[in-house]
Length: 74
Image (cartoon, rainbow, N blue to C red; front, side, top):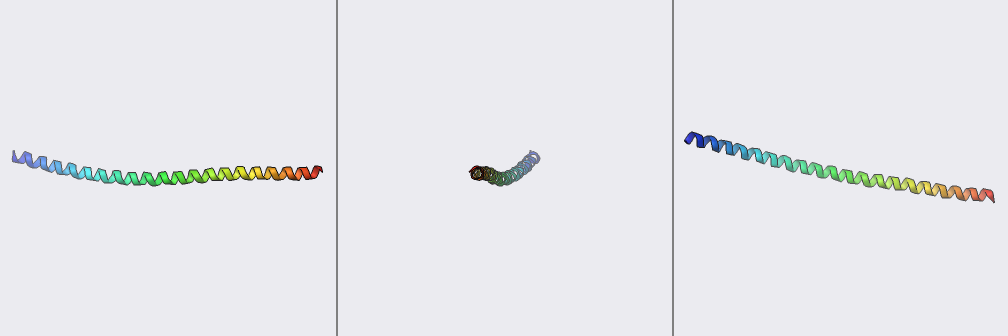
């Protein structure tokens, strides 16, 4: 019985160590995912701003062309 008890205690300790390792890996993965999520958010915002700037530039150029064309017609 003493041998079995010693084996169970060793197995229990090994399980606790493995669980601690998994907890550490989980925390590291959570941190990594948070960083990736932040990077995704920044890139999406930059892309949306780029699209908006492009649309604004096109609208501005179209408005400028209309002014030039109306000046030509006069």
